[in-house]
Amino acid sequence: MADQCLFCRIASGEIPAKIVAEDATCIAIRDVNPQAPVHVLVIPRAHVASLNEVTSPALMADVLQMAREVAKQEGIAASGYRVVFNTNSDGGQSVIHLHAHVLGGRHMGWPPG
Ligand code: DGP
Image 1 (cartoon, rainbow, N blue to C red):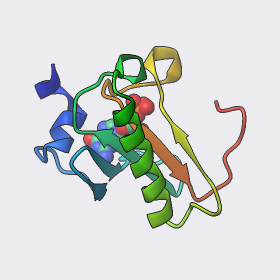
Image 2 (image 1 turned 180 degrees about the horizontal axis):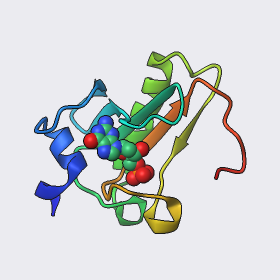
Image 3 (image 1 turned 135 degrees about the vertical axis):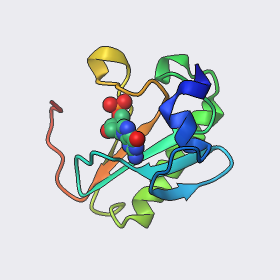
Image 4 (image 1 turned 180 degrees about the vertical axis):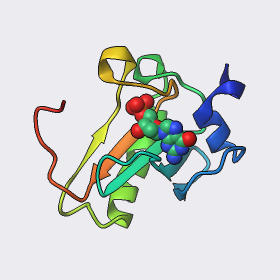
C-alpha cells in the first residue's frame, strides 16, 4: 500500500514537488491545486492513513512544528493562517496519507464549506 501511495512517493523523491521545508520526519510541499495564496502540505514521511490512525503524539508534534515554521517562513504567521487535517470522506480527504494543509495569505471564512 505505502509503495503505491502518492505522498509516500513524493516524500521519497520519486515524484517531484515544490519543496518548501523538510527534515528527517516530514516534508512540506506546495499544493498542486492551491486554495489560498499560501497553500502548503506538511506530510510525514512515514505512511499513516489519516488522523484516525495516528499512534504517536510525537509525530503530530513534528507535523505541527513544521506547519508553524512554514507559516513563519511564508510570512503569514502574524497575519494568520489555518491548519487543516481533512479526515476521511466527510472531511474531504482525497489522498489517504496524513497531511496538514497550511493555508493563508487571505482571510479565511467560517464555517468552512
Ligand atoms: P486532501 O483532499 O485533504 O486529501 O488534500 C490533498 C491535497 O493534495 C489536495 O489539496 C491536492 C493535493 N495534491 C494532490 N496530488 C498532488 C500532487 O501530485 N502534488 C502536490 N504538490 N499536491 C497534490
